[in-house]
Image 1 (cartoon, rainbow, N blue to C red):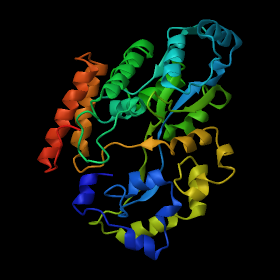
Image 2: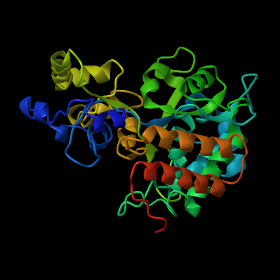
Image 3: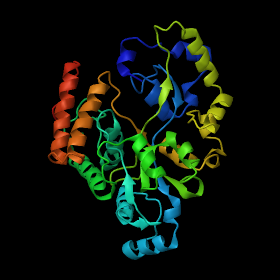
Image 4: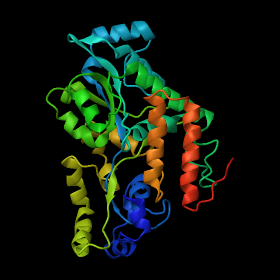
Length: 356
């Protein structure tokens, strides 16, 4: 949701409506309430109903991983069994193993990761590594204090890792690639592993060429400083200037019902309702359900600020310049990002501390 529109009262605040209709935010996965409904975050001010829960996850070629000759070759080289990676070091090792390997007469590549520059792609990719290397947006005890946090030595190591993964283990030409390019790469049998949003996994599982028994899923791997993944998804809001506010509210009331939320999950949507995702049989309801559930418990999100669009474009530029265009060092990229973000926040009238 556009944070600026909330701040300028373009959306209907839903607290009274939720109270009237007995819709409780306590009934939804906490991360989705914070990420989709609250403004400011972590305050009981609700502007949306959590609608489409989502996070970054990974797919892999389960059929390739299970081939005896591939398993033997991997174990001979690395001294461990080939299995979905639990850490980013393991993921890079697996990606290096598959990079350039010939499978069924075709050259394949190790991993697909986000690199798109124009909107949000490379940021939504690199954060999955950065969070797990210790990167944070600011000091939780002092908002907008970014120096030494955004550009910490650990954060720089995470950015270096993402570039190493991009350089060593991705297909040629993936310089500006996001969701669709990842789906195409995986469906066409180009890559062993693919970073993408859970939203696409139902369709991939049904794919006649790479779905079913051929596909597997794993949670975004851990890093040396933590285990998180990037939040996606969205909520449903009501536009304050709409002539159909009552219709929109009626829809939200209907959509919030447990039976409707269950159906939403069954047809390929991602419910954020605890009654659906915490049900005993949920992990067995889809091949990717356990990974989705785990991922929604470790999500982190980008800035929730009225100026988030500019903050995002700044990060897109600095990260893409370093990872793809080979400009400068990781430390320099993050130092410049702190300067960019400091300028944006100062223009917004925020007090920005210069050091920790």
